Length: 288
Image 1 (cartoon, rainbow, N blue to C red):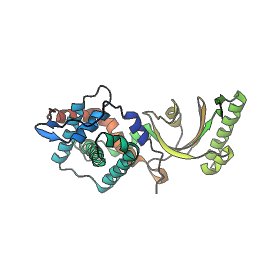
Image 2: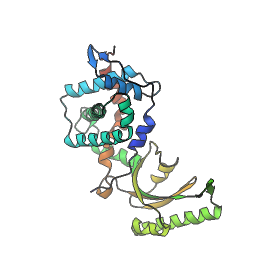
Image 3: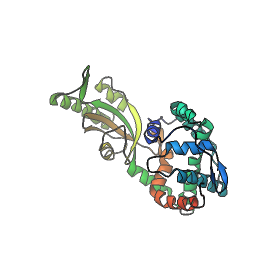
Image 4: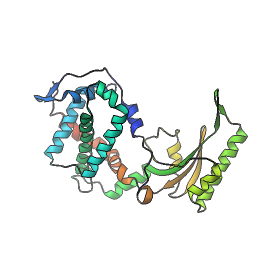
């Protein structure tokens, strides 16, 4: 069974929500049909600055309508994943949404619509799509832009009652040398679980990093990770941190994550083109 990677999902939800106003929204109509006021409230209160709320609602309706028109279906595994995501969202934001008069069922509908969009993207550009992108091309994009890693974080500062105290150069060099020794040990064939023991009580984590940026790591981290060969390790020193990083295969084995990020890769490859299609669909729906 694959290890569960550290998820940035809830953090991204927190960052992306920019709140405009509060309370329930008026019911709107699209092409004469009433739209659920809870859906309207969701888009009104989660729209980012500068986004056209009516356009977001029309886009949502367009995606749902086109999914139905294309006679597509949602796999059971995808529905299960959507349900799990909604439970996570509701755990963190349930009180906020309830205050806006938005139910958990509506959050499920919104998240399910995102799954519809992914399946429409697949219909257009998947291996068997209208304008197919080969599986090998998607995997190559994944290799170049994503990295499954196991890592330990070291801090080049110490905590005190008055905040942080920067280590001396001698202390920094000593800690960095220890991390480098651990990396060399991994590259000599020692398992990383054994190698990290020389770091003391350091905790080993697993996650996925990518070229789009990683909020949990300092700038430049990805550029260093992509230099590491699969199953090899390195000590990465950036700013006030030093990391022991082992890059592992994300396409197969215990840390497989390609299946999780495949749609994201496909969207990055064809998203601009796909958005033009979605815009075309959306033009057929007018909010009043």
